[in-house]
Image (cartoon, rainbow, N blue to C red; front, side, top):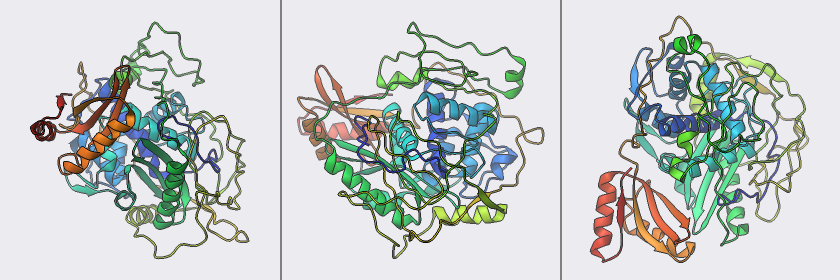
Length: 517
């Protein structure tokens, strides 16, 4: 999709329900960022690790049951290393339990226009009823970019300090080899294959794409590169930016399960605007939100779905399918797919660990998509819906196996571990504050002034990014459009980096202003 407008550029099997694997963690992080922005938690709030979180299989940070660790480190481990134990710890501490958090994630997904997504856990390990689509994951990737620009730079980091260890990015190969790539998230399980939601910017253009069902890291990355190349070739240079609307319902969360069980339903803050008409579960409390600006848009939007997940789970399509997409489309129902015999917990752990660190394959089987013609869809048990012309998405489908060979059966990964109950510790009550804290010192910004066109603003940002590569490493370039022009800004900086950069710019007698969080 064209990231600036959300409009579809190419789509194949974009609405087929598949296993998202660790792409799930994009929503886990979206929920964490939302809680921070609303003042429910701070980045330095210490979360307690449960027995369930500590027992999650690799990829993992190495948390211990009963350990307390700051939220900032859990976010870094989840985003950069794709740590399953860190993601589970975030969910349990924000919502009280994994099922409750998964229900909140599903409710938020529906509010964001993700029509074919349902979550059962916070980390993406294979579970019945846990599914999404390429279109929905691209939609979520775009929301992370627009709704949380102050945190988005975490997805471009090659490594990060996660408190108890320095972690390395699972996406570093693609980030290093595709010019302009700045995120977002990889994913792999045996049932899902190799998944990736990526975003890249070149000049005034930003392209977001998702590939699901890749056969290897190298094949997945190659298809993604072809998709992004296609996007940059077809997207217009000049286009009116269309920012997504904020979620349309919120509810208050309780600081612990005991309080939540005993208290009356939380009061919902309502704005003067009528409630949204978007379809959401009946048990979800709804309220409209009218934000004053981009940075405050999500301060008032926290999704809390029904405490019990839906009773029946729509089928998850089988077969090797890769695609990417955007919001607002409908899809034909996927055909039922059976899951083959379950693997042991050990198999799942080893598979997850090897996959996230899998080296690029020396060769690839089959052809790749080109900008001239999409790849033929693989022979899969799932129906491949036609892309809806009225909706937005970028999609790639990689069919690498010969048509005469049936796709391998999916295998469910059964994870044996303690449930979050009496045997594990209750999460600590979360400290409530009046305003969100900074992103570990990384929420400072600088402004280089306003320009007459977006192209001029982008050019100035690129020029400074090359001049101050060390200080601006990991910072996000952002052009803010207003009636006064196009303001060129860098966000996601530390105070020191922002001050030093502006000092260098000012020495050249050019404008540069530092903005505090």
